[in-house]
Each structure stands twice: as C-alpha cells, then as structure tokens.
Length: 201
Figure 1 (cartoon, rainbow, N blue to C red):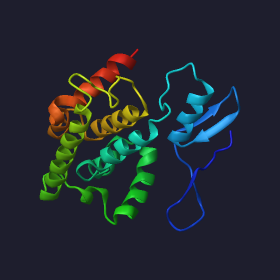
Figure 2: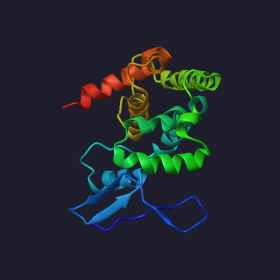
Figure 3: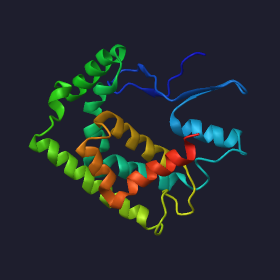
Figure 4: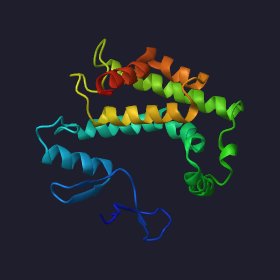
C-alpha cells in the first residue's frame, strides 16, 4: 500500500508529512490517514457498528479536545519531554533530534524534575484537569463519559489516549500520576477503569 500524506511539514517547505494512524480497508481499497477522516469513513461505511462520531457531535468534541490539550498549559508540556523514556533504541535518535530542534535544548533540560518550573507546570495541569472535570460533572452524578447519555465516542477515545500516554511516559507509580488520578475527585481514574473494564477482553 502506497503511503499517503494528509498534511505538509511546518517548516515552510512543501514536503509531505506522514502520520499515524493510517488504515487500509481491504474491502473497499480505501487508504486513509488522519483520525477524524478515518472515523467518519468507518462510521459511514459500517453503520451497523458503534458510531464514534455521530451526527452533531463534532462541535462539542472539538471544544473538549481543545480544552483538554490546553488544560493547565497542556498535557504535552509534561509528556513530550518524557516520551524518550519509553522509546526503543531505533526511535530514540529520531525523536531526540526532531524534538530538541523544536525546543532548542536537550530533552533533559526542557522540564527537569524538582525545579520550580517543573512543579509549576504540574500545578497548572492539575488545575486544568479540575476545571475540565467540572464540565464533565454537568452530566450528573455517576456519569463517566463526556456525553451525558453514557455513549462512548471519539471524544472519550482522545481523552483516554492522552491519559494513557501520560501515564506510560511518567510512570503509573509516580506522585505526579497519583495527582492526576486524584484530580476532579478521581474522575480520570474512573474513566480509565471503566474503559479497561469494557474493552479489556
């Protein structure tokens, strides 16, 4: 299957940017990249399966994802510098080169643990998660997913993915992750546990 590009590199050139996820549907021959395009295609092509992006959900989903990404300054602020810890040897060189060029410094210098900057970034992240949790709370007591009817959608896929990513790169036993689990009255911990309960088999 020939690789496809859905974007261009953000360096002023016209070089293609190849991203994941990418799918090849052998039933139709379609090859797609970009999460939204893939989900819309699957929802349309296979309507008898659970719909991850039902009609009318896109606007609310977009607002959620923007809010989650910017929570406390951004989940990526703490996860990206730490990602190198979980990469295999073949990936470390590329990741270090591209991210250090972006940051303008060594990855170890971006957010050194124990520094005032480190503590401040984490404090803002916890505060952001608390504020976002209040939005979820509007769905009523006991509600876990973003939409109040209990429907599992693309909104939850993205939030869960970012939480799992964060947990993996910083470590599930760290005090930082324990703080995430405790934020919003334990909402994010319950969200992950519910997802694992439903989809672990």
